[in-house]
Image (cartoon, rainbow, N blue to C red; front, side):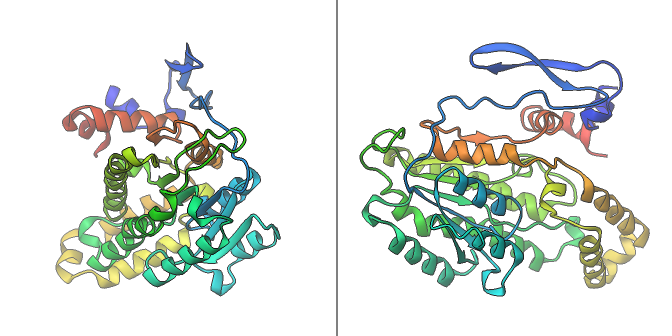
Length: 355
């Protein structure tokens, strides 16, 4: 019975409302976890946040669309000098045009493929030359660029594994290594409400799937688990140098970011089936394959439409005197599932979630 309840989103659970407690401003209060009409009743309280001032420079990758596009506009509205890295700037992408249409001297789009060392180094020079005083460094780097795909292990080609890793994991590593010299210099006299010698920031966008695995998502999970490990190692190393490293782990925002569409899923599925070894096709069968693709299609309209929790998390990571190590902008169902899968024995989470 418990396994049945915990394996479904809270909005679909029958019966009484589940409750727990959350801390807000030091006090304990009831927190609704779910009901037949599930509505989140609260968000994590960000104590100690400060407002960005002046022209502190932040680079965000993957700004053509999705989180990156929204982050570029959001951070610009908060007063940052934003460099928006866009993969398709040279192709005149609509998202790039919209960012450029703001005509602001505090928002600049730059051509950036995080897989290209040449393009990354060009952006380093663009940022350096744009700073009033390069010796005072760049305030923050938000590694957001990423791609996703799906497919069970035997359905996924090695080329796909490498392609996803090149962007999500090695792109994050490449960007961080290239910009750390500037970020380490982000210290200096007090500016407005920011404390003196406040350290620079690295914010890596991971995922709830960087903490818990999921069937048919191994290419993506592998890279996000890698981002988590990289971020932890970097945080340890940067501690004595004053650079703060945070990880943001969004939940399900597929519908808000248009990550998948039925058309894109069908295109991926067709290519996947056509390239499968004959023995795999024979052993699994087309019926099994089609059932998995149909299940994936149901995710196209799933998830939260409100990305503000992600915007708030990144903003806090960039502006707080003491940012958190990890942020969890996700609804309570996914938060609870993540706790179960990361803190309880695997046999228990398997019994609940793997079917």
